[in-house]
Image (cartoon, rainbow, N blue to C red):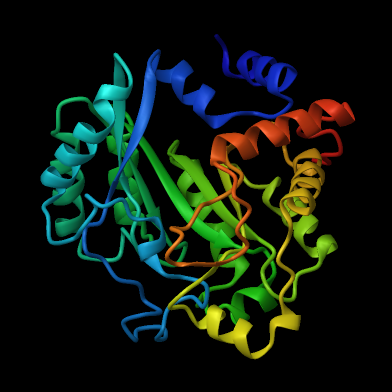
Length: 317
């Protein structure tokens, strides 16, 4: 099926463009990401741009048990595949370099570990999470060549399109940097995703909805959204203890209302990969909604149906 026809069919059926269905159309099978921690750091942790990292970040909050940098890439993939393979009769895998900044090293080392992952049976491609200020032309050219034979996606942590917010959360780059990286990546024919956090301190509803307007102008394949979560061991958690009134932690119902409005303004050609994130109970401070991801997605789909609305309803190119 042609991509434009598929996009319209999915929006008609689900009222938004579901990235998982886009992937399945490409591979004709279910696709499972396997997270990898390859032992990287970030430029705002190692002192080259700053220290302490982003104020909201504790990477332990999204690592599976098998995902440890003391294990080789091959070992992590073996354990990840063993964990998932029994759940479905047939499926393919994408090696997901998730922890910290996965392009922040010498290109020789980077390409070595990417190729190690791609040599595993059943692994059809890679997804590389990184920062927009940690990508160069040489590496982009490598990814472009690789994408001719394997599935490749670069996933950029954008977090906000508001420079004041980016400064406050210690990102170490501005929004223009993200725009440049995304445009350069897409121009090479590489799949590209962005990650946004909705509800960062200081951002009201109008600011958050402006993210949808801004991000919609970019040549993105996919978008990952999640609610602000306060996680133990972060600077933001300490800030919350000191000044909780500066934070607006949404209830599930409030966040669903916000998402529907966001989706209505989002470019219908950008697939949505995720709406929410779930930090481990031992690390999560708030909000705790008591909902599984699939339960939350069902609520969003029902709300879109109830309101008779859909992705891109108010999108302005």
